[in-house]
Amino acid sequence: MLAALIFLIALATPTPGPVVPLQTPPPEPNHLTLDVQTATLVTSGNAWIGGHGGMTQLGARYEFQATPKARFANTLQWERLTSHYAADGGPRWNFDYDQFDDEFDVELGRPDLPTGVGIGYFSYNPVYDYTSTYNLRGFGIGVDRWANYYMPRSVYYSLWYYPSLRGPDLGNGLYGVLRADVGVNLRPNLVQPWNLRIGFASDTWFARNAAATDSGFNGPYIGLSYWH
Image (cartoon, rainbow, N blue to C red):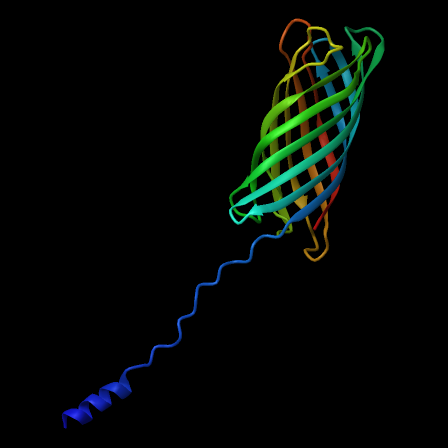
């Protein structure tokens, strides 16, 4: 009788299935982003009146996995700015420059929607205003929040500060430059690599001594990017 009872209990007890290990999500692949954008700018400064101009920018960013727990991004940008303004109410003058910057970020947070914190090198070369031609260069720090390219619409932004930009041909002039960018990335077809970007960019030059002049370049832009 006891043996029969044990047999019935054994039949009623479910046999445990095989242990299935937890599936870890696949690592985020390396990504390449290429973009081009154009902007309409308002030029301002303590000696400038009625300034306006335009900007064209080309950029490339490569995101890569260096170790299982360390992911980095390197961003290269080239920009051409040309503006016109009246100095102290006098005749109209030109202000234009080429700029190049190299930003190296450590990526934090979700790999599909990362935030980058890093260091950058910036060079205005050359800068031409109505009195002289000169170069500016230096290092800075910044933060980036990139678009989520897995979504049809997402917000991105960046903020970089270069505290001490000077050039050998600028005399004693010293600038701090704050660069800000905010926008919306639109990707109507998630299968295709193309994206439309609409945003607002701002470059503010802070005079760090009496030999420099405050100035700013601010305006909306539209751009096209390729993400793979």
